[in-house]
Structure formats: C-alpha cells, structure tokens
Length: 365
Length: 270
Image (cartoon, rainbow over all chains, first blue to last red):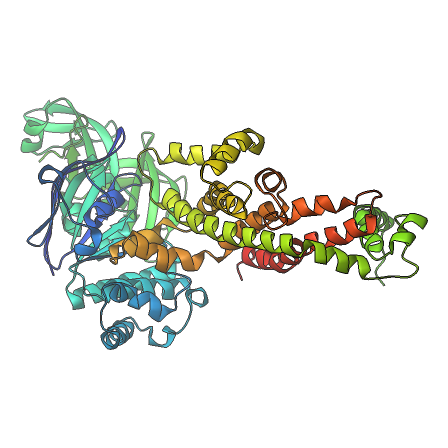
C-alpha cells in the first residue's frame, strides 16, 4: 500500500483551468472521498492521479515514487503506477466473459496462466461472484457488473484504488448496500482509496476523510464530523448536510457592551471573538436544521415563525417555516402536531451557531 | 373477424404497383437472357421465352470468366487493405485526439468528395511512371488506397460509440495503444468491418471508369469494362448482354442478401 501526495497541481483544458494549484495528502490505507458539484475538477484530479491526463504544473507522488512532475519532465505511464480504477459505467468489456474481464490486467502483465486462475478465483470469492465467472457481461445485473469491475481492479493488488462515481448507475437500495460492502472491503484490505462522488451522503458515510472541492480547488479537508461541525467556509457549510444549513444575513451591532447579530427577526448574542474577527459590519449566521428547537409557546430568546410546509421522513420531520419572510428549516424528532399556517417559536441551540464573513465566505471563530 | 380497412387495401395495391415497376427491368433482363438470338428479335423484351435456353448464360460466362476473376482479385485486395488501414486510422482518430487531429480528419473526409474525373490524368501519369499502366496491378494499387478515406470515416464514426472508459480502463490496467486495439477494439469491430467491407465491395465491383482508363486487354480488365464490350459487332446481342449483366450483378446481389440480414442483426444488438 502507499500514500498519495499531490503538490500544487494545475491542470488546464485550453483556456479553462480544471484544477488550480491543488495540494492534498492521502494517508496510507486511508479512504479519501473527493466530493463537490459537477465540474468542480474532482474527476479530473482522479484522472491525473491515474495517469490518464497530463498536467501543466505540480507533482504527484505515489508512495516513494514521483509519478508526475512536468518541471522535472517526469510522467509515469498509468500501467507503471500500480493504481487501479473503477469507472462510473464499470467499463466491463462485453466481448469477454467475467473471468476474461477480471483476468485481463494479469494477462497483459504476462502472469502465468495457473497463477491467473488462482488469483481470479480468489478475488471472485471475495466479491461473491464465483458462479458468474463463465457468464458474459450482458447476462449480468448492474450490481453484478459493478462487482466485476471492482474485482478487475483488485485482482492485481494495486497500491491505490481509484473510484469514479462507482455507484451513480445503481438504484437507491443497491447503492446503500454497495456503500457498506465497498467500505468493508476497503477496511479489510487496507487499500488506499480515492473515491469521487457528487453525493454528500455517500461522502459522509464512506470517507475516513473528505476533500470538498469547488471550482478546481479544495475548500476543506477533514473527517466527516469535522466538516459537519466546523465547516471552514460558506461553501462547505452549504454543501454538507441535508436539508442544508440555514443561512441568514445579519448586521453586527453592539448594545450595552454586548455584541449582537441583528437578523431582523431576532437579535442573537455574539461571542466577543467572533465580533472582533469580523472585518465589516455584515456577517452570515448559519444554523443546522437540527440545532433549532421548535416550541408551541413563547420562550426566552426565541423568535416567532410561521409553518409553511412539513416533510415527514419517518423518524423525524423537516419543518419549513418563515420568520419575517426569511426561510427557516428545522429538523425535529418530537411530534408536535404542528399544522401548516400555525405560528411557532424557535430557539437556537447554544454553541451550535456558525458565523461567516459574507465577503470572503470564511468562517469567523 | 378483423375488418380490413379500405385505405389499407389501397396502400397495398400502390405498393404492389411500385414493386412491379421497379422489378420490371430485372424481369426483362432475366427473360431476355433465357432466349435464343432468333427469339430475341421476334418477341418483345417482356414476353417470357417460348423455348428457354441456357446457351446465352454459358456463352457470356465463358467470355467474362477472366474479367470476373480480375474483379474478384480487385475486390478482395482493395477491401481487405482499405478496411485494415481504415480500422486503425478510425481507432486513432476516435480515441487518440492529438493536436491537429480534427483538421487531419477533415482532410481525410474531403478526399471522399474529390471527383475521380479530376484525378484521371494525374493517376494515369503516375501509374505509367511506375510501369503499371494497362496492368491489373494498377487497379489493385488504386483501390487499396482510394478506399482508405471512406473506411476511415466509417470506422471512426462507429468507434465513437465505444465508451471512452473501455480505453481508460485498459490503459490503467496496463495495456498499450496496440494491445487495446487488438484486445478491446478489434473484437468489438464486427459491425464496422461488415459495413465498411460492404461499401468497398460495392464501390469496387461496380466501378467502370478506372478500369476503362487504366487497363488494357481481357487479362487485366475488370468485369464491368468487359461487359460493355459484349454488345456485339453488327446487331445488338441483347440476350448475351443480359446474361452477362446477370453474372455481373449476381455476386453483389448475393452479398447484400446475405450480409444485409447480418447488418440488421448487428443494429438490434444480438
């Protein structure tokens, strides 16, 4: 196994910059998820690590081996990088049997026939596709094809496993199962994995760490809970979590020595260090839906809001409200018998409120 | 009982009439080829033979034997060579975009639109410079190269439907450009080869102009040119001409009937 180091990588397609001065350290045996909206450069970064794309600037190291450095004229071909890749459409060859597909990387490496059979059977057992070895891909379901693709990637014991939205073509139920299985497999094998997805739930549930990408650069790298509890900026705060974090613009005021964030419908007391860190008089206040409490009666430090819509999702409900015309989403597990059009009082959980500078988007702490 | 709508009957009557009209020349050709020279003069081109004879077919085949063989050589060599290069070029153009590849491909496509009449004189000069003028070899060479742009176009278009990820996966798995061609692209190429070959066979078999200009004598001439010489010296030997035409049309007809099914099957993904 190996760690992967990306240093100041820049990749351009003609005039457009797909990846800009990007650095990322992926630990040995780590499950790293690259997540971001489409066009953010996550697949491009993956292809650069695989060696399917050449870059303009920067370096990529796999273990102790420098594989990309335009400055030093280094470009190691994909087949010599010891990486394997699983594609969104699986790229399972229709003219070869399942056995042929899995054996393909070994055959190209001129591995001994007996050894090939042994290793293909081994990896097929691992992925529970032994009975399918003689079938042609067109006789397989989407989930089975995906297992074949993963088996083909694992059969030559790569240093790094790259996965490009491998679950995008699976239906919702299978996707949940695939998530658990791939994660379990990765943990058992301890293989360094880079996983690209645009689905933040997939990212949260699978990643040891997550790199949130946007417009060719990384907004934040951290464990799922770090990203969730301490987003570094507005983008990460908005991208991670469903329903997304409530964001309200506010004005910074002070009254009797206390700093307040005036939301219009509510004056929120502001920690001193936040007020001092704020460069201007404007700021953004962010609260996750589960950090707002709904009351039926007026409370201290609460504000009034009108229920517009209720989304029951079983264990809990998303309640959509309006406070002074501004939207508020609350996730609550208490059964409140709320009705649309009714008024309620909302209070914010202390210590769970995020503050951002609206001009730079950076979190104020 | 299902009622048949009168419009449907009209449609079928119309289709029958059109089919009859289209098949009329074929009918005339076949019946004339089965008549003796006397009967041809005495009957209309549409009346069936009173005393059918295979004599004209035998005579025409005897005359066209050598040219038929020549054409077979031309078709075989021309189709194989241009399909081979077309497949490789199509693969490179569709899967390995390089600087200027679009422009280069455009030039290849433009080659398809240069009328042969424009190329007649330079080609004739070239062929006589290399000492092949009048020989079958001149045509072999010509068809080999002239078929490549068409084949490249066909293969490139069809290879574009092969997912990019097949290539990428093979690259990551360690395959080089030729291994990918051999192991991944070529096994998926049955349909492109059939379509390109079908086009090439028809074009080469039916071509008249190049054979007329570049070859001399029965030993070198393609069958289309020889057929034109079958017109008879004093009177039009219609039965011979029609018999010859049947021999010339037969191979392409058979190929179309046989491979036409194959193409439909290919498109249905079976």
